[in-house]
Image (cartoon, rainbow, N blue to C red; front, side):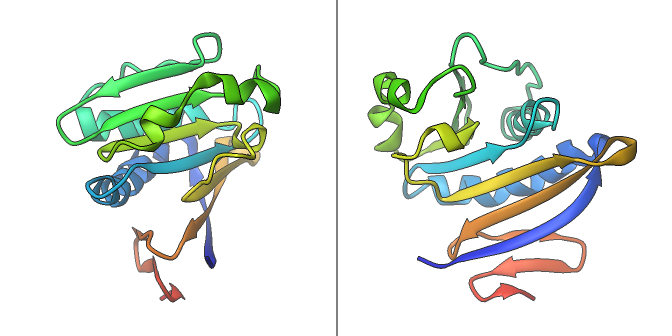
Length: 163
């Protein structure tokens, strides 16, 4: 399946707005099947900030913390269930012991995986990469399968790529 790539720069304060736009596109997909998105980036890049924005937009609750030690946080809401996973402390072999099959087979689930490079066996619908730049700015790169949509300003990405 082909992937498309979009990259834009945002301030850290803008990440919740970016998260809202992404969440709206992703939640539509969860009606038919679970959606699995990897969120990649170094320490302090804004991965949990982005997830907090997604959960706040979908559920009205910004109470999101990094599941670094719990590994999985589940946020149930009226539009979908957001499953936030942090694989930072796990080896690729340990990821298999998490038993994620239930989430991967349930429509209405949006699974957001921090440190997705540790989960090579999980088929991702998209990967969002956050890179810290100067002055608290973040470069947001989104690589996604053809059926994903994201719009910001006058830029939109659809099946054919950038429009």
